[in-house]
Length: 116
Length: 108
Picture 1 (cartoon, rainbow over the protein chains, first blue to last red):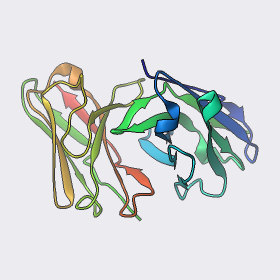
Picture 2 (picture 1 turned 45 degrees about the horizontal axis):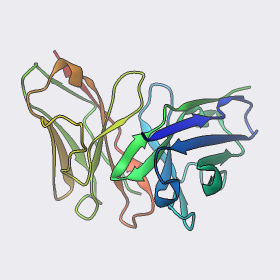
Picture 3 (picture 1 turned 180 degrees about the horizontal axis):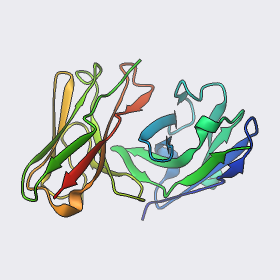
């Protein structure tokens, strides 16, 4: 069965960096685009970034462009989100999601807290 | 920039029909998707490409889209359908996604 498992969240000071991972299993990872979506505490969903199935294209929300980088390692079936210059407003649960017919599978999320 | 607008809340009694709307300028050209998120859980896709229902989603969930508005309809809403519902679409270039602000559905 399809599984997406995020990791790498934690507490980090403003201006520092963090890398999130999303381990995929149960499907052919290289056939699907992948998204990162975040949700600040008590708030709605916010689309963050997408990477195409072959890694050839990457797109970002304006709120993270230039600070976050999405990438994938097909040999490890893993999606990444490198987050630099973190701000308090980046505090959120970060979900990875498969781009099938819509975001058809989601992980359980990993919490990132940016605080001094 | 691309935006999707949803009502903050909708309330119905059990067995009634709940309709949640989503408006956005890109919707005439881009599909709408709908997600259900129950408290403390990850979102679940309930409608894709305006009106298609993933396997395992009850038939009472349906979707439609016309012009700049997409609608999620829950026919005969049940207590277990209480959740936050989000619409989603890509922008006109197809490169950036956006979620609506979410609608809290109360069934009581």
